[in-house]
Length: 253
Ligand code: 3PY
View 1 (cartoon, rainbow, N blue to C red):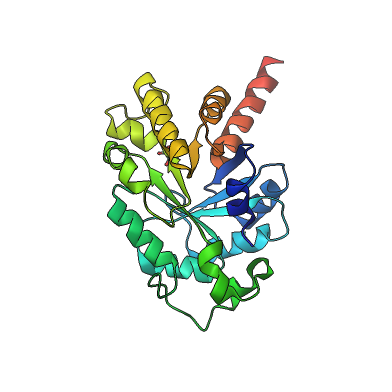
View 2: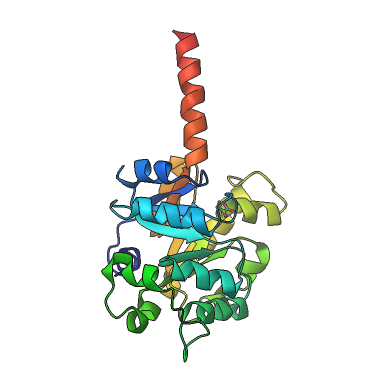
């Protein structure tokens, strides 16, 4: 049973999460019961591999937070391996066409709906959350989230939103800012306007919208615009900011 996917379908309250780039099961376990609704293991920008993802999945098994994994590209072989180690909710970066989105849906589904291989080492996925009849239910339980984070992606958004099997679209303001000529300025007014426009489209389509924000006011704004899940930054930023704040507070006293 994929509780993240079920929540996106049912509960209208925004679900707050954090990206984890530290690739460490201990960090995952610490964060897993803090009240965050979801944690994302970042295999796009964090130095994660299959084994570090697996270690974090294990560490989070007893925790309350749902787990998402972001993979580095659209490789169906990597998708197969991630699903086989028990990943249920996948975030895929840089999706810029309906064709790419359809290929991703196929990569996450067993035949006849898709091309996912059936592995004899499937024990891990089959055990995940105690899903009975895994082979029969996996296609329905997997949550596929595609990232819209470039001008091309926003141009193709209407088409991407027609793709069955895409559960949610996650807007990436930093990459979007870069592609709009505002590198390093995800809060630029033009970028915010583009994010809000994209969120509105996703909401209207009936799919769930997600977004990344490092400022609370921005996160709230995006939730008011209909985002159902929002990342409130990263583990790396939190650690740096709180350490720097501690040092500053000590010297100020
Ligand atoms: C972005 O903001 O571009 C993301 O992908 C989230 O980190």
